[in-house]
Image (tube, rainbow, N blue to C red):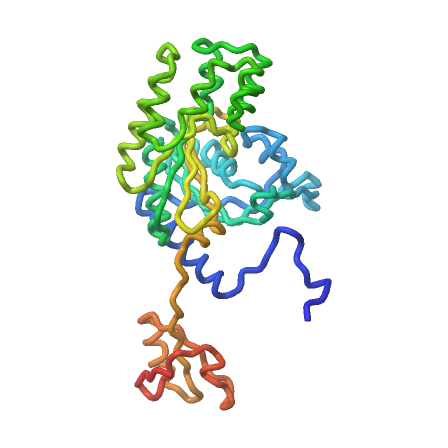
Amino acid sequence: MIQTDDLLPEGLEDQLPGTAAKATAAMRAVLSAMDAHGYDRVRPPLVEFERSLAGRMADGRGQSRRQFRFTDPASLGTLALRSDITPQVGRIAATSMAAAPRPLRLCYAGEVAIIRADQLDPARQRFQIGAELIGSDTAAAAGEAVVLAIAALEAAGARGISVDFTLPDLVDVLSRDALPLEQGQVVAVRRELDTKDAGGLSQAGGAAYLPLIHATGPLDQAIERLAEIDAGGALASRIDGLKSVAGRVGDRARLTLDPTERHGFEYQNWFGFTIYAEGSRRAIGRGGTYAIAGTGERATGFSLYLEPLLDALPQQAARALLFLPLGHDRSEANRLRAEGWRSVEALAESDDPAALGATHRLEGSEIRQL
């Protein structure tokens, strides 16, 4: 019977052996794919000084309010439990690896936590895996990031991958000259575009932005509609960039476009993407181009989250487990483990191989299936 004291806080949960094994296999596959593409792994600490971490976040203190904070008894400074590893990678690139040749390719994996979750995803602890290409935010860099994200998911076993492109700074770019807006109108126009509210958009003074609502859907068709918008050439470079990224992806994923989507893209600039896979109702990851806070260095990257990825992966087949009875040949057991067998040793004559989950039994030098 579960005691009240044994309950976990809201948004936190245990991963039991089956799920943990599936998660470990997926993490290894994703990191191996990143390593194969030349991304070196870094491991930032779980906690940092709150001031330093907030300074590397694109929205500064706003994002830091989502973090668990506490006082360090050693320094008496305020520490924060990370809610995102990307700013930590930015700090590493700007400090310890400031002199490293660019573009710098780094990857990471680790736990993050937030004080409050949202209704769509109630988890307050997540496992984040990502890759950052430091020193470039070109279409070529964006194409590499998207293809790497797809390759990482494929390596983990995900299928039916789709990628939704967006242009996070589109309203900012258009409002400066091509489709001018008063400073106070920009926020309202962004908000109405987010909700795809044509009436609200017109009332906010953004009637000229109405065609953007319809420039969504399958990438080829959406790009055509985007190109029809008379923006005095302001969209040309972005459309070329989208086509370049799409050409790099080819037929490895279904591509769509929602040019004004900004949820989850608060610090990306010209390009962003959300990635999905068959079997998961949630987005598995997001990425795009951005500038590292504090230095302004250009970068491109993405983050994947393990929990929604697990939903997209097929159920793992039962793993073979070799039962080693009392008095077994230990050198033979070591040899079999070196070959890849998992084993469990008997501690008493009464140990039941089936109850322990064993699928095979070692008898002398012979392996017999149970």
